[in-house]
Length: 374
Image (tube, rainbow, N blue to C red; front, side, top):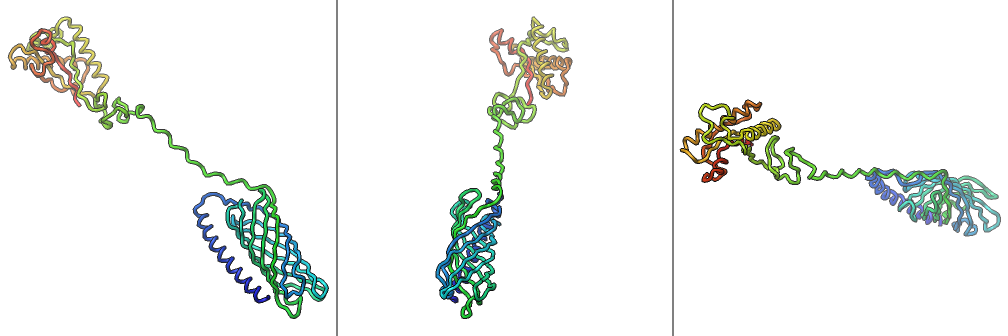
């Protein structure tokens, strides 16, 4: 029994060390990937224990006895605990008399699974065993390995059941024997001290991104057309655009600025003498054009003149140029910088907007335009 027990002790110890190393490697990898606090309870605990021995037959004693003990320990990681313990058993010898064993040692337990679940574990320990009988007493080293199952009952209490094999190198209790291997089964109630630790704070949650503004409320190129309707979203500053946001040729045609037939004459500079009656209506239209140009200082215009179709083309060309020139001068005289004005140019009887076969149509064609330059 002695050699078989010793070999079995060594085999269990080697197997337990290998399993612990493999689990430890996986746990270290998981820990490196996690940034949260470890989810375990590191408070100190006491673990009163009661159980039974199945004694080595070489002890020449009853095969079964009760034992009792007390452990003090704590978890040092989510999967590992260390206990300092003491336990004691008393045996009756086959030939009469009693002997007792009191063991003082330390045990390491490595657990598998989640903290609050049923957790199987492996155990290994070393101790000093004090033997006492009517003939002799003394110390001997001992070691143990085992396995068990643990379950949390409350925040501060666990239940633990454990089976193990303990080898005792006792060479004094019996002169003809040297070492004993015993099996044991124990039950422990683990009670932790103090308040349970606060749960780890949850990882901060990034605030959701602010909602994107409605495109109808945005005008990225500042052309006065919102992004929803703007089909030309990157027009340069100062560009005149239409309702779709795209560049648009704008003509200030000065409708209402009517010229008398064949006016102004060559050399005529007073625009009021060239305008059709009533001149006040035509002057009001011109003054509105001046005001518009002052409100939009980046706008440049071409001053162009036109005529009706009465008369020769050459004469009408000259007349259209005079009409453009007299309006050009009026704008400068009323505060519009010449650098913003192109021309004046005349287009003669070209590009009519009215019917040259009627008096009303011809009156419409005797006109000037301010053509906005893009």
